[in-house]
Image 1 (cartoon, rainbow, N blue to C red):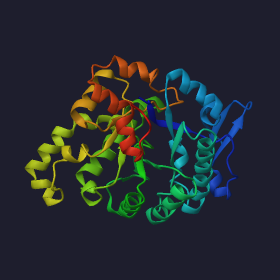
Image 2 (image 1 turned 180 degrees about the horizontal axis):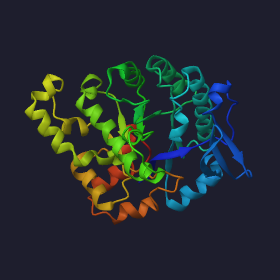
Image 3 (image 1 turned 90 degrees about the horizontal axis):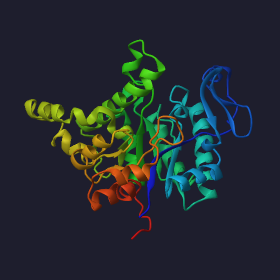
Amino acid sequence: MPLIDVHCHISPIEFPAAPSSEAGARWPCMRCASKTAGTLLIGEKPFRELDDRSWDVSRRLEDMDRDRVSIQVLSPMPELLSYWHSVDDGVVICDAINAQISEMISQAPGRFRGLGGAPLQEPKRAAGYLKRIKEEFGLSGVEIGSNINGIMLGDPSFDVFYAEAEALGLAVFVHALHPVAAKTVAVTPSETAFVYFPLDVAMAAASVAMTGLLERFPRLRIAFSHGGGALGSIIGRMDTGWELTEGFGGSMAEAPSAAVRKMFFDSNVLDPAYLSYLVREVAPGRIFLGTDYPYLIRQQDPAQLISNLSLSDHEVRSLRCGAAEAFLGETFGHD
């Protein structure tokens, strides 16, 4: 039975030059100490220390074999999604990171799949770009931020993007990015990473659930990182609101909990008891493995984690591969 890790990031060792001085103020580039390590800069500001796990296939495969991971689904470091640039500049970065993912897949096609980036700062342009993600880069879907420059994902302005993703059969993976709540208060980077990221993912999932998005696009396959963040603790409250307001004023024909069960979520909650709750109660059959490789805040030894959970054989199979296959729209060989 394969073990499929859907939450795995990459970053190129080289980036294209900034197209303008204005873009350069927030343009990504690498300052490398060697071929195996360096610092990602955003403009002139150090953002993250990286090593060759972010771009070197052989190094990554060593770790996958160690962790007994059969397949990784590669996606961009979220900061590289670059929604704060002009759409034309955003396309330059998307092209670079999508080409990197495509090249890594080509080196070990049996071990990797990919989710690319799209310039969602302009939803119509992003919708048009999706065909390139599928046909030119050969990827299985797209990674998007939990908000797009402060706009929640259920906003109707994104419908053109979701419609095209649904039509092309591309999966959509939502990752925490620049949390909205963190912009309104003074918080430390640690608070942002450990607290506000999962809060923003919950806000994103709640926005999708409460705006009837999956009623409008019933074949859309959309997943949320970090187990949906805090979503699991507010589903009952959302359902109560739906009942008391007659479907939020008639905007939703089904309860939010029903919409949630149509979504997918990764396992990256770093809490075995809560993960079991997600698997059994929140979205049965819709929770897949996600480690956040290769970053510091990641799930270690995922195979052992799953083995230690008190789950049925069916639930284990779903967590190891079944939910990932449903999300990606592809079946991998297993008994």
